[in-house]
Image 1 (cartoon, rainbow, N blue to C red):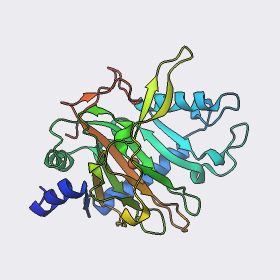
Image 2: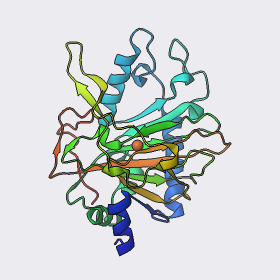
Image 3: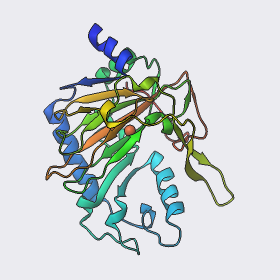
Image 4: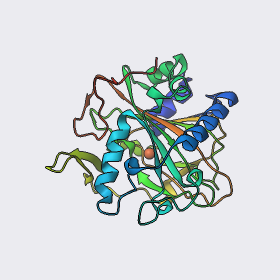
Length: 283
Ligand code: FE2
């Protein structure tokens, strides 16, 4: 249950920081499971970075297939021209997605339960639909910057309802690439939209510009350094970014993206579900 101050901050700033949302045992189990998934993953032709002839089409296919699977994505520079890993895979991993919350025995219970269902209701998600889960790695020393963006670009609904649930599985600091947000920035328009379009050669993915409103300046950004176990929630129009990790410590985060079932989910969103894996809520 949100306090009145939290409810006010949610509506005014567009984000909330909830320390201690997950107990230490849960974040430790999640970190162990992430390492197990990476250890068990065998890079292959489906990996997406592994084609010299048509990398982007293979990458598109890999992303689309991951909507209903648990798939490891590597840093592009971790592979050579033939698509072979040139660094140890546990150091090359960029993210794992996008159906951990449906298919994984650890991340399914991590992603569901009465606490999350109650929080979603407090945030205004009356009938949440949890479309996506991601383990996002920031590798020590080489973890890259993720520039300003709005998560609404990837989950178009009418009206806009997507809400991000960002769990720190390890301490996120100024040095290892914590989140930065623009408080109140959710009043700005959606600047771009990620589309999946049919072509004779198969579906293609592209970012479409929508609005020329500039991204915030660094002076508008507030860092959110948080200890492991913290949940950061923010609305789909809130501009945010994360800085590179130049520190010797990794920064592992887990995210969920949920929309409201009463809002129309665009057929052009890249992430669609088949009847075999229907989208569900937090309960
Ligand atoms: Fe994001």
